[in-house]
Image (cartoon, rainbow, N blue to C red):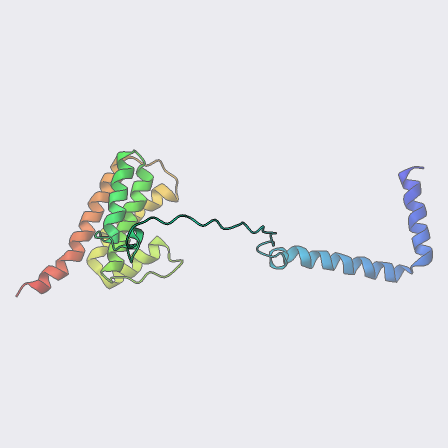
Amino acid sequence: MSFSRWWTETTASLGDRVPLPLAALLLVLAAATIAVAWYTYPAWVPRRLPRLRRRKARRERPRPATAAAPAVPAAREPVDEPPAAVHLSLADRLAAEGRYAEAVRERLRGMLRELVTRRMVRVRSGMTVTEVIAAASEHHPPAGPPLRAAGAIFSELWYAERPATAEHDRRMREHAGDLHRALAEPAEREDRP
């Protein structure tokens, strides 16, 4: 039996049992249900599918015979370096490895961290580099030119996807130094009589 003949006979027998308006209504409802499910797809799928977990037998580790454990783990001890210095040292390491785009990004992070630690700008989640620079320039105008220049270099490398060079890293170092001096000038003026 050919497909066309099967189709004709199946639809004819279905038409004998189900009235045409009801069949059309059922098809429209099915299409609408599929469309709504398709439109809201991520919402009705659970974020994490449940997993069957096997319980593992806990093994007791032998404890060392030392007298006392330190009260604070070594990983949580305060670091002497300020956060901006961490970014700058990472940027130096990346530049030494020839990874100039990452070095530029870390230098910009260090510059922004310095603004945050000096309370020149309050960074909110989701702010872009341009928004942070605009907020910092509004609060402290001398910081504007080095920040805008650093933001332009960052955007050129990361958003325009231009290849990074040692020249970009050198210019970012200069802009970071200019920003540091611009932020230090008001403190020096306040210290003077």
